[in-house]
View 1 (tube, one colour):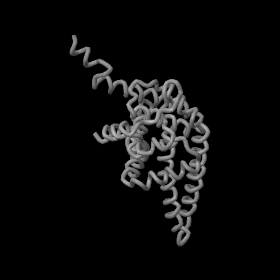
View 2 (cartoon, helix red, strand yellow):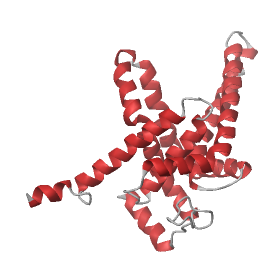
View 3 (cartoon, one colour):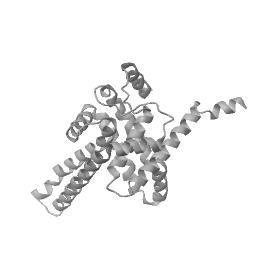
View 4 (cartoon, one colour):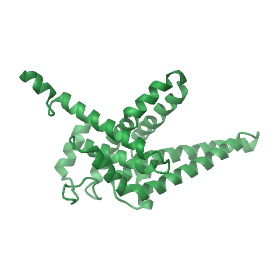
Amino acid sequence: MRPLNAFFDNDSAFGQIMTRLGILIAANILFIVCSIPVVTIGASFAALHYVMLRLLRGENELNPFRVFWQGLKENFVQATICWLGVVVLAAVLYLEVFWCRQFSGPVALFQYPLLALLLILIVLASYMFPTMAAFKVTLSQLLADCIYFAVHRPVTMVMVLLTDVVPMALTYLDYPRLPLYAFLWCMFGFALLAFSNSRQLLKLYLPYLEKKEDFTEEEDGAEKHPSEKQILDDMKKLEM
C-alpha cells in the first residue's frame, strides 16, 4: 500500500497535478460567477491572472477562493475602468470598420488602419489584466508597461494573442461541437488560458518584480519581495 499512498500523496507528481487542476477549476468557476454582471469582467480577469501568477510562483497549496477575492478587491476599480474603456473603443472601431465596408473607393480603404488599431487594442487588452495583477501601478504606467512588454518580446506577444483569440474563434466557428466547448469553458477553459498566458508573461515580469511592488503577500499582510536567487530559480523552472 505504501507505493499507492506515495502516488496519491500531495507531494507526488500526481498529487501536484490534481491540486493544480482543482485550483484551475475553482478559479474558473469564480471567474464565471463574478463576470455575470458583465461590467465586472475586467476585474474578474485581473483576479483570475492574480491566482495563476501566485500558482506559478510555487504556491501550490493556495486557497483559490481567498486569493481570487484578494485579487478582485485590489484591482476592481482599475480593472473595471480598463475593461469599460476597451469595450467602448472596440465597439467604436468595429462600427467604423462596418460603415467603411458599406462604401467603395477610397472610403473603403479606411477599414485597414481601423483594423490595425483594433488589433493593437486586443494586444494591449491581452497584456493589461495580467500586468495589472502582477504590479500595482497607475493607469498611465500600466499602459506604458503593456506597450513595453508587448514590444520587448514580439514572439511572446504573438503567442499570447493566439492563445486568447484562437480558442474563442474555434468555439464560434465549430458550431456542431459548441456544447462540448461550452462545457470545457465552464469547467476550466478561461483559467487554462490565463494559466498559459501567465506562464509566458511571468518570464517577462520576473526581472522587474524587485523594482516594483510584488503581487505576492505574506500571511501577515506584509509584502514579499523575491530575492535575486529566487527570481533566477523561478526563471529556470519556467524554462524547463
